Length: 73
Image 1 (cartoon, rainbow, N blue to C red):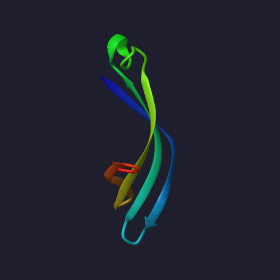
Image 2 (image 1 turned 180 degrees about the vertical axis):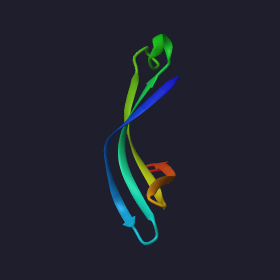
Image 3 (image 1 turned 180 degrees about the horizontal axis):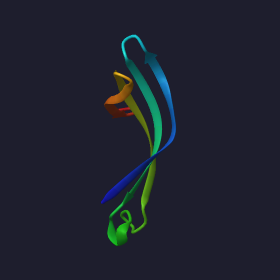
Image 4 (image 1 turned 90 degrees about the horizontal axis):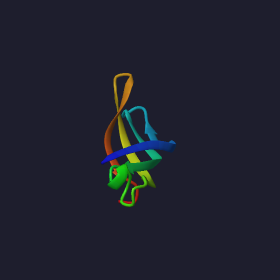
């Protein structure tokens, strides 16, 4: 099984430059391949949209993801 995700939309919901923290909201489209005939359960790739929350932490000049969770969980 292989899953690929693409970002549809993303925005910062919180930014604290002094502390070096931020929160990102994103909508991603996830497509799953790998069931019978290389697709999902019925042979076709399965696709769904999902909301994601990511906490970011600044490390020098780079922002890194420190935590990820599905929105609403």
